[in-house]
Length: 439
Image 1 (tube, helix red, strand yellow):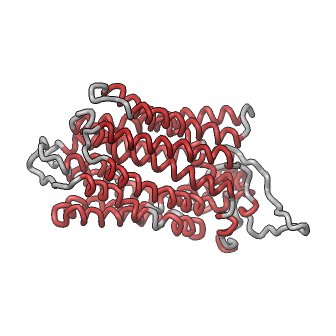
Image 2: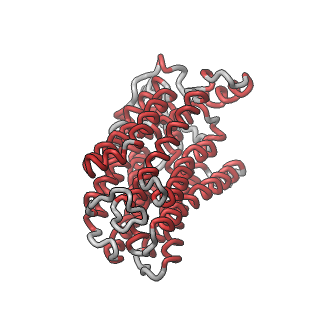
Image 3: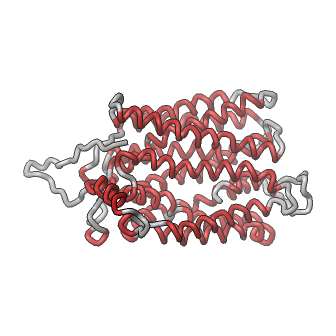
């Protein structure tokens, strides 16, 4: 539901569409950029509140309500476009963003309660690779759906229906914690709860106040905010603009455009499993300390795509295979960040994993708003490779500096403010928990 518009908007604004029975819209590049970025206007608002709610009240019904509403809103997109134009679609996407803003903070909160420490990175990778799976499916079939008898509206009907089906399964099987899940075996519940009891608070009822000041004065956490923001700038520039780049510069029509647009995200999904396996091997054999593992994987996930983006700025429209290869590399290698900054929130403060993810994802998605707008300001002629080159160079620079700060300042020690009731000792120094955790 988040990415369907990236491909659909190509068909919606294509006056030479193979399916002329459905309305097309005369939206210029600036208007299309506003439509594509509007999702994030709502998305950033609910990030931090969602983290707090998920930690204090549980994530099950928060996710259920949010996804059900978002599914309904998605199916209304064609109606809004027909009767209200691009401004109505913007408003609808803002509401969808408000709903989906709860997803990542809630998922992090669930992981902190369900994932044993030794399996945290693996289970986290499986959870978040679902984002790429959804992207692959949506981008792969969007071209076919747009050319079907139902036209481009079927893109929104399909993704809305998929969200509704998920909500039914989540209502039946989802649970806030092992203690609330009726079908879990006593042995499994005991195993999970005993493995995470030292990294979670005893109960939501006795939960201490969130240590906001300590969070925002923590250098490792500040570096985490910056690297997450840099990641979103590059990732969402590519996600929202790959279809337009392929159509205008490479001259690929909508069906092959959608299929090829999904290839980088298929590579990212598969690479996430490979990197997860590699991380487990490194940790279990003690070859690489956890803090260096986080930094190495994050550098792979940001600096190799940086180089690919620089190369992409010099391809021409007769080098389609090279361009597709570089795009696939730039997005696919991003998967290494699942073992880098994306699980560092739980390293720093497992008691506040949902809130930390809410804060960094809120800040990062401000970049997701700005990045497509910057593309709209730079790319006035979508077929001009020199204008696209500026876009790719900016993304490469953001990747470089964001990861550089993470490499210098990030930590994997559980921070003292994970347990706010701890007090400073008589000398005024902070009693920090220096436990490094498990990947």
